[in-house]
Length: 169
Image (cartoon, rainbow, N blue to C red; front, side):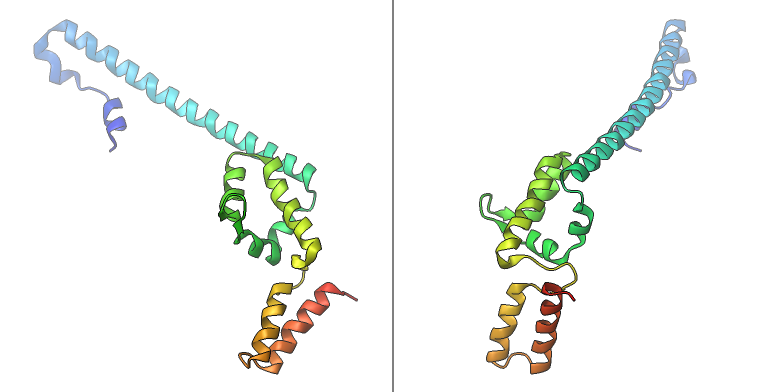
């Protein structure tokens, strides 16, 4: 039992009988207040939960307005890999920064992460939705193939996957 719960447990009147009627009355008042505090604590927790759920719903509605396809992007392997990178302005992992923005229910900031990734993607680092490889992976695979670190078959598989995602038929 935590200290707080211990503080709120009811007092046993019998332990105070030898101190007179006034002490018994004080114990009754303390027990009544303890019960009221327990009730209020439960109500506050319920209100906190409702506020949090409402704030969460509002956050996702705002994010949907700002980036209608955010759910699809949030599953994109390229986006997830990009989030593992270090943000050059903060020198911290992008995922940590994104999590902080979401924890603060800052839909605008979360949307900016997605939009930044999309803008950067248009310069050649974008990951196609169906590909599990990136352009950077393809560059690395090319070097690995040249230096004999992967087989021709492994290299061809990566190339084909990237090609299909970039130029769907």
